[in-house]
Amino acid sequence: MTLRETPPFRADHVGSLLRPARLLEARERRATGEIDADELRATESEAIRDVVRMQRDVGLRSATDGEFRRTSWHMDFIYRLGGIHPTDEKIQVHFRNADGEIDFESAALAVDGPIRLTETIFGDDFAFLQSIVDDGVTAKLTIPSPSMVHYRGGRAAIDPAVYPDHEQFWADLSAAYAEQVRRVAGLGCRYLQLDDTSLAYLNDPAQRRLLTERGDDAEHQHLRYIRQINAAIADRPEGLAVTTHMCRGNFRSSWTAEGGYDFVAEALFSELAVDGFFLEYDDERSGDFAPLRFVPPGKQVVLGLVTTKRGALESKDQLKRRIDEAARYVPLEQLCLSPQCGFSSTVEGNALTYDEEVAKLALIVETAEEVWG
Image 1 (cartoon, rainbow, N blue to C red):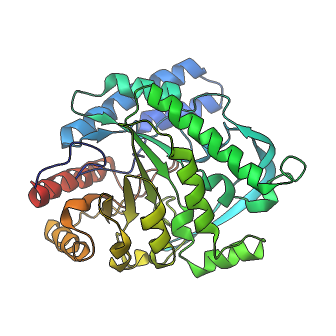
Image 2 (image 1 turned 90 degrees about the vertical axis):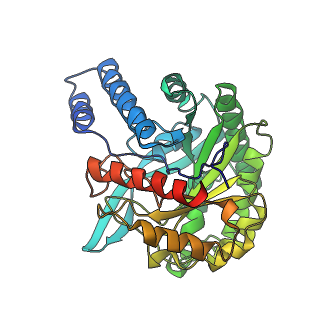
């Protein structure tokens, strides 16, 4: 068995990486007006060159820009869609970690106009990344899944004067995403990842209860999301690999939801038309591997066995044992290895050091080489 030549790769990673101190300082100086946008972008570009070099040096076959130009993995994209704007209302998200609890507050969104793509979102960012990766390294673009536009506010966030018919909302949303997919493919993108917490959150009964209380159909919401993602990527050009990443929340080493993939597994794995699934599997919060029995031939499962939520390095032998456990449900040739989530889904980052981040990525590469050749 050999390493894969197309994404997802045997050793891969989710996308976001810890922001260096000089970049965080530059962002603060930009916020206070000490430097202009061009100076900030120059600092970002320098930091991206360094982090792309790091990914190459540890042996990864894919590279992202670490999401260094973003504050948030999803809202930086969503607010750039036509017809969607932040509101004065604040959303409270409750996170947990091994030491206690964290409450995260961010602006709510409003769908107050027809959803449309008014620009190629992250187009310039991807073009820069593409220009600096080495031969043999595939530039990966990460964007939030269409589901995230709906999950954040549900029906209540959609102006009924704009969308009296919710089917038109879904049609416009998928059409905007389909145009984004077409445009980034035109820029040379061959590896696109749709990040999606909603499909993992829906496995948690507490999350389904919250959706029901706000008036959404929690028991069938995942089926709608799967249909709309499929509509968004149905016409992707040949040669563009599309994956999805699912986790249960990632903010300063904390999480929101818990529970295995059982509730969504059969529909998710058999119907979602992506090429690979990045799945969070770093601890008991994610359940066991039994739901992988629904993964059909031809689909890759990227096992997120290495945690990004703490710096302690995993045992290579333990990783191999867990890969063997997963292979009881899906053939080994359909498996890959990655961290369970990004290292810095928001600008604050998780509670580990840069050296610990690099060590984890190197461990993934070394383990994959020993498992798959």
